[in-house]
Image (cartoon, rainbow, N blue to C red; front, top):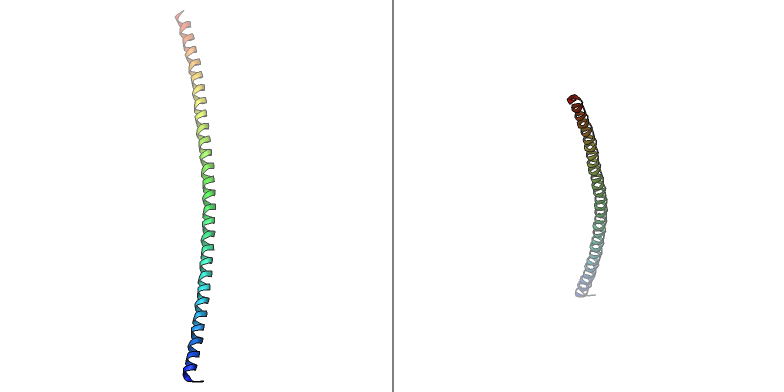
Length: 103
């Protein structure tokens, strides 16, 4: 075989080797991209789950706060009614005593 044929054969083998390397690297790169996409999807799913849990917790706390506020309002109204009843009773007693003193 001549050196030209030998050189051509070596070049063809090198080109084939380089093409194989390119294909292998491309496959590896695509696998890395797929893996990265899976990680991103998993992170997004985890974040969405955490957001849903936080929204649920916020809703529950808001409901609890509203119930506490309503209960406090009811307690204040009951205390005022009790105070009003006691004031009315004391005023009636004062009127009675005045009436008795004026006789």
